[in-house]
Length: 130
Image (cartoon, rainbow, N blue to C red; front, side, top):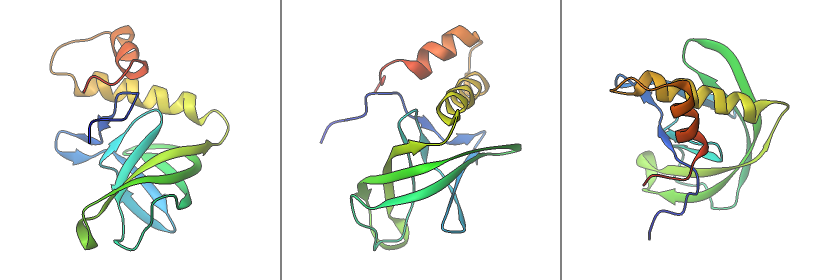
């Protein structure tokens, strides 16, 4: 199956360490990736596609949070190695704007060459590059 995401997704690690997290049912889970429309995270193997859940996104070292609801769109692997690809269903308040800002900052911090904020914004807002 080919890539179905419209927006660019970003590996949720910086210098090898997790930098984006989700609180789900009291558990803090390191995200695998993050985009303007969703995220991927480790999940128990008993989850089902289409299930919805509340989440709180967090950025390592920053007291900001983004709250909302997501739906499991895809499941990969099984048991303790399972990963759920999740689609954002609802984001509270200005959460989408803040998520955009988080990703722009992440792109700038992750770049191996110097890029401008405008370049990073284009990458975050543009279509998937993969």
